[in-house]
Amino acid sequence: MKPQVIITGNAHAYLSDALTREGYEVAYLPQITYDELYTQISTLTGLVLTTRILVDKKLLDAAINLKWIGRLGSGMENIDVPYAASKNIICVNSPEGNRTAVAEQALGMLLQVINNLPRATAEVKQGIWLRDENRGIELTGKTVGIIGYGNTGAAFAKLLQPFDVTVLAYDKYRSDFGGGFIKEANLEQIGRYAQVISFHVPLTADTKHMADSSFFNMLQQKPYILNTSRGKVINTADLLLALQQDKIAGVALDVLENENLKTYTDTEKEVLNKLLSYSNVMVTPHIAGYTHEAHYKMSEVLFKKIQIIQ
Image (tube, rainbow, N blue to C red):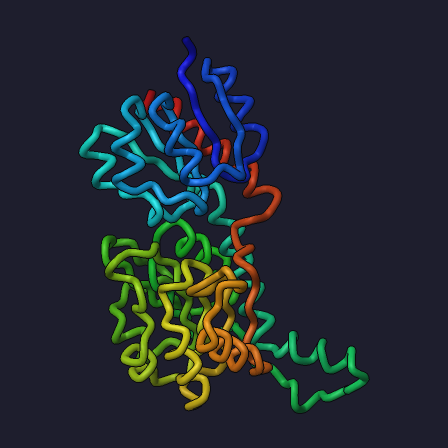
């Protein structure tokens, strides 16, 4: 009997084809529910995820034959990794596959927001032609704070190099990575000197709401805030307050605390609507790292890691 794998999220056909050639029986079920997966997981050798399915202790206890879990993308917050490890289930992800896509979107959003492009474009569509009011600033020569210097943080820094910026990079789990235009820094130094701050951290107990009122209150340069990591890294209500109090110059978000807009409470709706009412705020629907190229590369990277752990 062939080892069985279920792919539970949107994956490039490369992954299913490659696993099949490797000898697996592959079921591509991107709409499968948690309950449906629970009834089938006892027979599985491997499981492929995106962000949709929560792999908790209940699911792992039922996974009596599971050898590995593969996460398409970077974040592992929807997997109880320590409990999986206790059951000798190996968990791997593929941040190398979409780091360039995330970095390119972060740079693109930054250049748009500092040059008022979303606002100016919307005005021209309404027949309004304002030049002085939409005068932007140059990225060249600025100080950019990068919080989280892993795959996407380092890829973002690489794209910034031609702009002759100084990068202040903070990573709780890494050191000795500085050099040239990249300076290792702590959060206090980023808050004091950075004119742009970009978040590139996973969602953990340490990073949830790391950008809260205390964080925004320590900022001294009125920076632009970018987040292409996870929505819960930033407290949205505190971000709105910082914007209202003129502590930040603009915002570019690809992620939100709650990305299921249909489930919003009245309070969540009010906060988001107020945030979106600002012309110096950009929000996109979690599409950083979602390019056609990244879609393929994440599957390719993940398959190579699965081959190694078999």
